[in-house]
Image 1 (cartoon, helix red, strand yellow):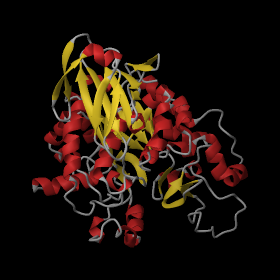
Image 2: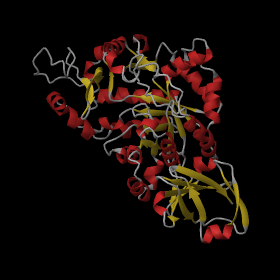
Image 3: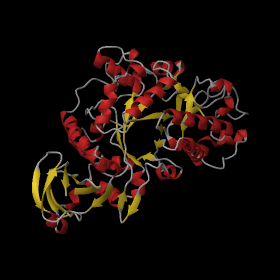
Image 4: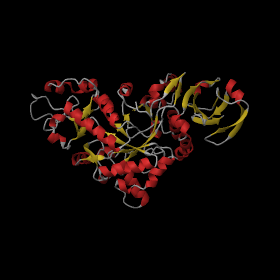
Length: 499
């Protein structure tokens, strides 16, 4: 595993794991926003004001994921424009100029010419590294754009209709040349894409070279729908075509080869997998540093503390430390919508997710409390002011979470006692400089609980509730032996620094 991710487990305490903050920016919509913000055209990587990245650094971001940086084709853009009515639910004042094409229908892994060049990406990475930030880029493994040049030059790289299939090919599944549309076993077919054949060694070799290229230009990559190319799932989807062409199951998984080979050259590259269907641990085992962890989010969204508690009570610390925790991303509804329109619950859910080990993921527009989804095919979302409460909340919490103790400190989940214990979760983070406990009431109505702090120093001490800034004088011996008593409002949290 990457040296930054390694931690140690000791008596249910996770020691010295690395917990980065990853910030997703939908690149072309972001440039459109910046154009409006600054009153001048900002359409290239070289145009981005450096203060925009400095702001991300200042709020504690470690990795900036510029989503949608690679070259797209005319086919995908025309396809999306032909389906323009699909976008009106997200953007009621939609115009055809708002369609920019899916960033997941990639013709080639070179910089989108509208944005700059590969060298511009390399230069931007250096600027970010010099200011203490790291660059994350996309790898879309499953498919290419339909107008990728490889469909002409290397048609065998793709899944194709069985040789005995009558022509013309069924347009529900195949392009006129017999290449299959991209797809997976649950979502059908994406008809702006063409399906790579992962049981062809030449295809695998080419795509491994792409992974290494991305690693040479960045500090990490987010791998789209990473589970769909696992050998079992791939065969389940494409069995008739693979068998008909005589392809044999590869002796190893693509990811184990690609990650191992890439890290031999670029050892500090991190790999983040978008993954579902219970395949998260499989991908960790194959070498991924972080994997999407959606199960906690979905249980949080029920607003039922009883469904959240089993997940956290049985938390596997090694799994958690390799998880990517989020309350929204570009595929999910906005957090406020996910949490039944209640901005304050979306905030406490985010704090819960960010208070356990693993990567902390922030989506474009999340910190502004936006409710309207930004469709990946469009350059903008429907205009809104966002939530004042969300802006206030993250303004208070992010300066706390950027502290070293939350990045690489020791973590432990604590018990809360008292008649209302069932309302609460408590998480302790410590290092040589700080001792901090996060206490969350994930229910309606205020509650009282006691949290024992076994490492509290003896004697009277002044503790600070870090969100409000309020201080209290408490006995360290009492906090050790009986517990710190807290009263926390419903759907709220307190964060205490103690000694």
